[in-house]
Length: 192
Image (tube, rainbow, N blue to C red; front, side, top):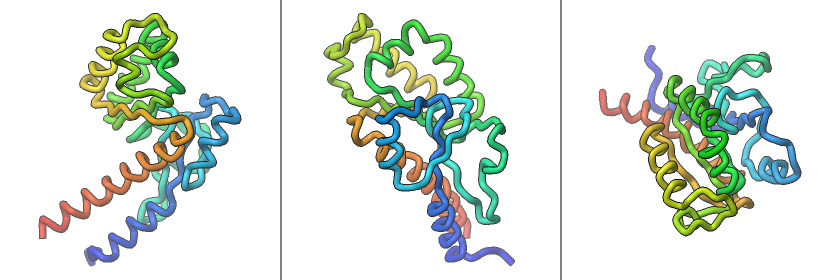
């Protein structure tokens, strides 16, 4: 018997309530990171992500997790990932000296059709355009790289303060999975 819309809404709610943020094991476990994790509105697990610093895990209607919690060595290719940079200087380094490594990571995400976010702490577009950072990278080059990568990788750039980055990470991942489920519900509703 097909499942009713009310049952599906209830299952979406259960999946959202099961949400756990996945923190890449390469993300340094500093005091600053601990403050960020404490501002998540859900539990988190440290796992090796093949790209991005943060991703999301949740239970499906059948009770299975999209990324099994029992196999810590399993490679995780997230369907949505957030790459976090602590400031524009770190980002400049990624677009400069570390560009090849950065490109490989984003190419891999694209191969897996992942939705990508680049979250940059303590920065704004105005800082990018005015060169308000220590790096020698020219503002025009940084802006061009950001805009080109947005187009090339369908990446969303999010700027925020250091103190709100944990909340932003949670909100982005929560909205992504909520929209994922609701899009399916809308499509099913319209087909009836």
